[in-house]
Amino acid sequence: MPVPPTSILGGESVYCINQAQLSESVRLTENDPESAPKLQRLLAKVEAECTRNERAAFAFTLIERLRTKTD
Image (cartoon, rainbow, N blue to C red; front, side, top):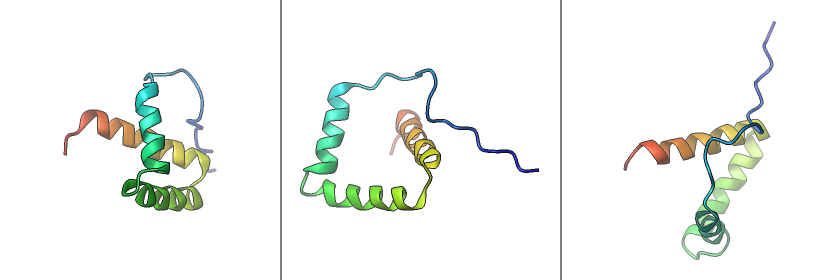
């Protein structure tokens, strides 16, 4: 019998979100002439193909990789 996926949409916070970083992220995604089109395409694709829980997993994974890995 399949086990239902564990929701990762709520619960206790592990990281704080810096308001300035969040504001800059929104600006890049919505208004930056170079970054916005690329980011909006990626967001549309992820939102169309993934469930809400999968999108949360993707977001947390991106944050963790940014936090722990260098380019």
